[in-house]
Length: 457
Image (tube, rainbow, N blue to C red):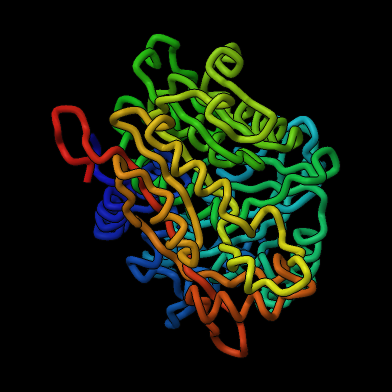
């Protein structure tokens, strides 16, 4: 197995920098996933404007606001510092890869002009970039980078990062367009709300889980031999025979399909995949986004995929999957005697832990003996997680991130009492000017005993 991609990229940077060999660095970029482009820049302090060191989002806004020919001249100028030439060349190569990925996607309903939301790995930055399709080509336009993706959830927070009229227009189009093109790592998905009005996202929860899967599962499967199946805008098709002993996958509550599409694109060997959601529009979006990955042969999507519309239940999904993912509603509700006379108008997509608890109770059947369930939840619901976990299973918190609390999900009569209960009983926090935050966590659920009596943790 090869070294971790970012570590390898850091080594390649050092070699190219020592030799002042820009071509060597660009050749390396052509061999690695687009998600490995930016981490090395901050690690090697290459994001500069003159003598001033910038954050990734500051540098992207500066370099992205210039004309492409001006940026190209900086790369070719021998008087420019080597690290700055290499950093700018990285930016230009990144734009090329995004253009090629958009061109290769062949999404049937993709607008001629729109906005891409690109999420840098480890969610270090969120980048909006305008695009326009001209015949068979795709051209990228204005750009706006923010230091964290959560700002997209709140237009007022995102506005503080827009400095030019083109950035303001880009933000407006991103917030109000019925189409959303999302790229995370090397997976592109399209959310078409003209055809699927109840399909949203991806939320920060889904992005967080997908990013963790890339760093801790998919990247670990890369080898010099199989890399060709993942790194091109149109990944090379793998043979059916190579997937005979592959991974079986299930997503409960598939939504827009980012997690299923990312699995189809990035898992080294895919034996089968299944997805279920109560929304027929969500299942349709997931099917389309999985199909556009085009790493599998066309017949594989129908032969290997099982897409189910309906309520979750053991009778509706396959049993014994190697990898199960779930991003359920996760905000706990107070006991009945504390709710008051009126029912709270709570969002079905956020509040209530019934699905979370049911999936946990079913986990011994859902997961194969060597498999795992990855569930993302607010840590406000840790009591429900603990009480629902069967004794035969273990649950480990493998990652956690502090995010804004979506107050819009609980607007209405009883809102103040509910928020107060979450603060007093579950640990909802206040940050800054009365802004509410909570931690989301990724929980890895496994059988307590693996084959041969070994502990799974």
